[in-house]
Amino acid sequence: MIPNNILVNVPTYQLAELEFLQNRYAFIKTANKKFENFHAQQPTGQLGQTVNIELPPRATTVASLVASFQGAQQRLNALSVVGQISSSYLFTSQQYVFNVEDYMDRFGKAAIDEMGAKIEADVANVCVTSTYRFYGNGVTPINSSLQLAQALAQYRDFGAAAGQAKGYLPVVSIPGIVNSNLGQFAMKRNDEQANSWELGNFSDCEWYSSNLLPVHVAGTEGQADSTLTVVSTTLDSTGAVATITFSGTHTASDANSVKQYDKFQFVDGVSGYNNMRFLTYIGREVSASPVQFQATADAASTGGSQVTVSVFPPLQVNQANNQNINNAIVAGMQVTVLPTHRAGLITAGNPLFLAMPQLPSQTPFPTGNAFDPDSGASFRHYYGARFGTGELGTVRDCIWGKLLAQDYGMALIFPV
Image 1 (tube, rainbow, N blue to C red):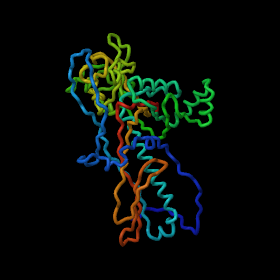
Image 2: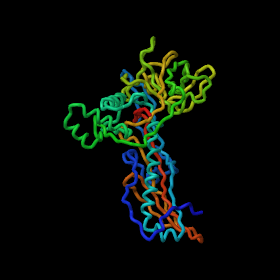
Image 3: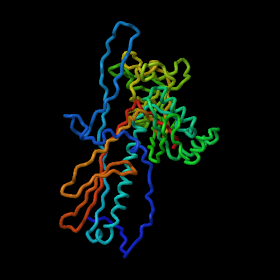
Image 4: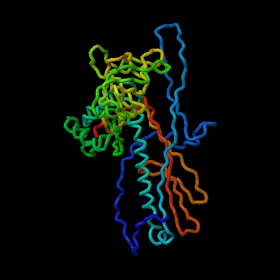
């Protein structure tokens, strides 16, 4: 059935030279596209829509010349191509000939821009789903280079890949940060920023702006600014804390107490308890970074105002099993929960992977694959007649998969 096409049926019409309303495609453009040719790069025998990406192995040490043999473990992350999207138009033969044959590039551009925005927003979701460390409290705006420098320091204090970092900020936050810089006595840098009104490179980090950063809607505890108290923990097979039961929920028997991807931080200065700190990722020395984690699933509070949260990463105090925190988690310690927020990102080492494999030819229809310079995305285009109907259809589509190695990213938390 032909949709309700609204076409101009006049002798001539003139293009208004209006540009499309563009989004910022920072994530698609800067992602690691090593697996762009996804199918051809899969190892022999590994078929399907997932490829495993190797993470660097980890090692332990002992303060002795007497060997203590450790278990060798190859670490993998799975990159799965599961996203799919299409945009299509259908015309009668008369509509095609008299109205749109010379206008198809404009319809095509509209379709590609719309799909590119949807893909960019999906990739940007890694800011929420694939980060457990964070900077910002979701209440105080991040609006100065000092705060960005503090965020980078916290990111690097834990341990970060060598080389220049990448940072992704809400486009609406850039003017405030640049404006704060203009009040500092740094003439050459200020001249550059005032002329471009862009942040650019700062503190060995290339900063990008996005208007498609995700908003995470927190559970009741985050929205109520709850401070929760540890009651007990359960351990996984390695002795790491896998779940924590807390008391002090805002509401008893609340199905929305904690939402998946809610982020938590241990409170400093609780009387009778040591402050919780991450160990450095390599070397396992005590860092200055507070222990943070995210919930891996929704959790409801009980009638006794307790909630049990499944946590990532597993919090390990056993030195022989990839220890990552300085103290055991015990009853009486406290945590806070982030409120609803918009999430940006800091990464280093090119850990954000994007696969956009080319789709096969739609024989017998003419088919082509093309790269869009604005979004950085790869799309398929095919078209043809619907036999015996007097109708012509055109379709643009693509598939994609994304992956952020979680230890390599840190969320930047902005108020909504």
